[in-house]
Length: 396
Image (cartoon, rainbow, N blue to C red):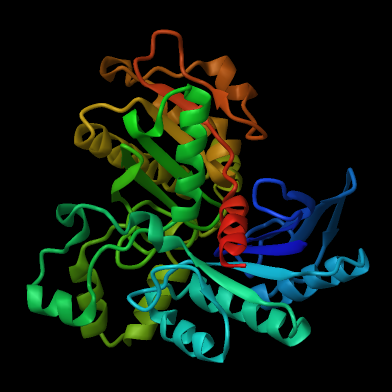
């Protein structure tokens, strides 16, 4: 069987085609990523993929995730790959979905009702599903939800301090995101640390080119995470504001902005692009900051500062962590950010090895902490697609 996996981020779209008869034996025959999809960056939109040992990179006009999906399907067809099933990462299932679901007409209606929960991600993923249903109508498709990993969070982490009747009536509680990534990375950490996952206390930083979050994992389970009811709160992100005073939202509405306009400001015009006015890409901002751009310097400082706050909070919550782990695009490739965040905190037992850190480029799990560090620091590339694959095989 050949199974196509789509992993739709806010500004990227990863894909893999696995071949095999089970999740344990399947291996990728085609893999790639569409980058800078419908985003504000100085870099060109492109798709890079690997097939039979060769790497191909091409520039495309990727004005939407829909257009990226169309190009990716064309790549699959060019290699004459016959598909048996398609699995989609769907960020937020709200209260309607709590497990992997086969996609049909009724499912599509319910998925549309989930748009407000994750206004950046869910419509994008939905558009990719629509493209696949149009171009590959006979191939069964499945939606796999990112929120499942955090479902067992303690109530003290999950609930908001608002009237209980409102919270229950409208389903207002913390859902958490990047669950597929955290599921893979936590298991991989246990493997490379050679300890049972159930015995570890981990802080995992999923720092993507679009969205970013942090999770505290104890005994293999999420006990708190930086994102909440939606993917908007928490860290400073590419175009999202992260944590802000809720009164700012109310003030904007009182000044005449509609809820949709406020949502657009906070989700699409804030974060790094809002602070810098230059780019939503942290790597580009770091380069510009080093050349003296004051706005980019502030954006970089705020990004790191907010991350440090969560690292400190979760270290306290866990009563010390066995490891701090950096994953996803920014987490695995930006050694400068890792060094900035993990330097000068040796008094709490965290010490990064500068040389190891610079050499870690994210192609494999790398230990980058110093010999005297009580907390290990790891760079571990994520593989959400393998988690999606396992879910698809389970349903098949």
